[in-house]
Image (cartoon, rainbow, N blue to C red; front, top):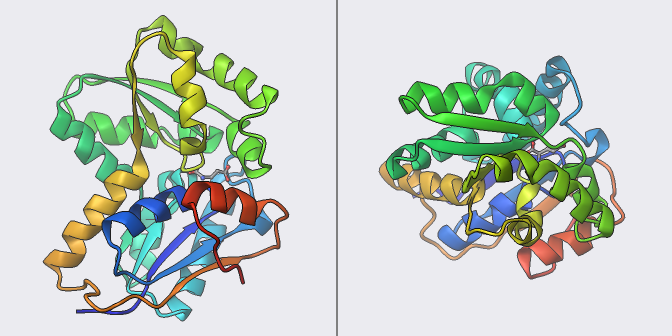
Length: 258
Ligand code: DGL
């Protein structure tokens, strides 16, 4: 048994889509969330900067005495996870590995990936998918504007819908019907993405695969909290005007922001 909180971080509100799934799958766990709003967006930054920001987030969460850290950010997972794992003596989980395991179990042989510019540039999804699944076809698409539009609370605006239309074109042309939401901001667009397609699509949420992976691992290592939870707090590195409202839309309840 381990009552220490799970630490989660992202550049902004996106990681809350992962928090929501963790909360549902592991309702007893205490949670500390860090949104690095001072450095948002991560998606257009160089690898060196992403590593620097991610290290800072991990150090802060370790100081807050978390038992495990979830990198609830595709950009940081794709470019900094290996370095974080080497440098820090604490279990760290990213969003790619648990999701690739899910895709492998489903035996899919063609999959779309949408993510930030930095994530697609790193090619981390394609490398991870192809290393685990022989002959899988991967169709990547960078969606540079999506995280920023979501962070500004404009996901359902005309602009939000227009960019989704544009970004979904290659998937429609190639009749792709399974797409990984490779940036944690993207579940905010789920409904709009579905409306773009005339056929049924599966949108794979990294939050779900990460929450299942965490459950299995905490249980295996006897690290679950079986007591009543008493902590759920969000820290931001810079106050953000729309954060609370967007958070409420994602989580369906009000969060405490510090
Ligand atoms: N939510 C993040 C991701 O999963 C970061 C988006 C951004 O800061 O550009 O990639």
